[in-house]
Length: 384
Image (cartoon, rainbow, N blue to C red; front, side):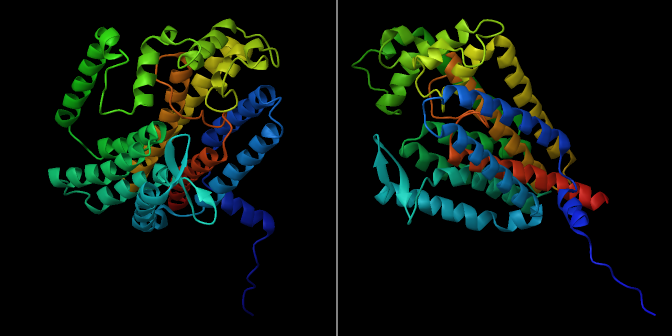
């Protein structure tokens, strides 16, 4: 009599779907999400359904993460070229007949209005990781030159829109892939040194370079104003410098322990602009103080560390490079947002992961987490 093949129970199927999910990564994201919901309730008190919408966006990101985690890295690699190509074509379409809002042409109507630059945050590192995987063991200077071309095309198109924040995120993710692929330090140090020299010159020559009649040419006027405002916010305290000044006041007034939940005066008297999006860290710092800020710093640091651990344990070059770039995405999001709100970086449109309101950014974060979980699962399934 033949053996009876039993169908797996629902519990067994669920257990299989959850095999390999990285527990520490899931835990730190959950803790960040809790902090995000808490401060969104306070800072979004008069923004209608922002708190509920933020919770919905969190669930959407979680669903995307779970779905992408079921896709093996090999299949992700197979989609790299089509996704990257579609993303670049859409960026070109935006440049030709995109929708302009507030002086920036970043959107296109394809039945629904989308922002194609968001696609490149994931598509670019996916493409670069695939490129280096196919040339593993025989990398030459030419391969890195092609990789830089793959990187420069979308970054230049995004800068043209202009969208400095998204361009910075895409650039950081792409450079992380190229660096971890084995780019030699002799090619890295010269541009770093030139950048440091440029910063020193900018600080020393600030009164001259930031004069109203000076044209920087390489930057749009609003970008020049942001840099000059960073160097001297008091130059225009009720205009260009208002965001930075109010953010620093809110964070400083929080002290060590903060004013308490729902007790932030700068927040609730509406002195903090964009307090549910780009400047939500100022509202958080006012209510939860230095200790609350440290909580976020440690949480984001652990998130990046855990992503790098997953990268170090990945079985293929493609997986290692892709996981490393996801770590860089999270680092850049957090560092740039906290830096601009604290007055050490220019103001750019970069949200704080899992804390700031925004559906598009949450989708990108869900994709990044899903990729990390997929890479972690692939290692676990191979071992089992």
